[in-house]
Image (tube, rainbow, N blue to C red; front, side):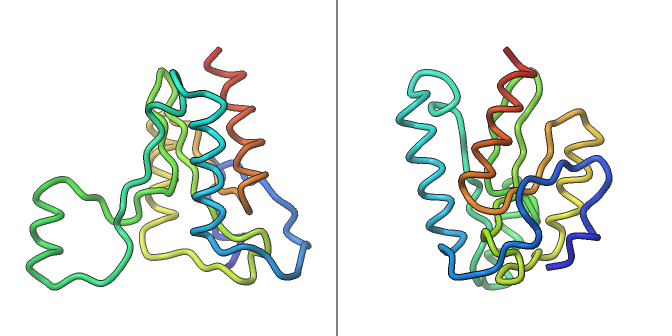
Length: 138
C-alpha cells in the first residue's frame, strides 16, 4: 500500500513505520463496529454502516448492484451526519494491506463533498479518527 497516494483532503491515522503481526482488516472492522455499537448504541452505533462491496461477483451481479446504487470503492465505515464520517480501515501494518480500485477516489470525492474522510491503520486508529470527528459534530 502506497501511503503517498492518499489524497491531500484525506486525513491519515496510524504509524506508517509500525511493522509486525497484526489482525486482518475484517477482524479490525468487526472490533470497531462492536465497540461503536456498545459505546454509542443510540447514536453513532445505531447508524454506522459498512457497505459490502467486496468479493467476486458475476457480470450480471455487478450490473445489478450498480443499478441498485452500489458504488465501487465505497469506504469500510460510513456514519451519516451533518458532517459524514468516511473511513477506509486497513491493517495496522500497512505493508500487509493494499488499496482496492476506486477506494482513494471515493475518499477524495467524499472529502470534496465535505465529509470527514480518513484512512486508519487498525481499529484503534479508526477510533482516534472517530473521536476527532465527534469533536467536529458535537
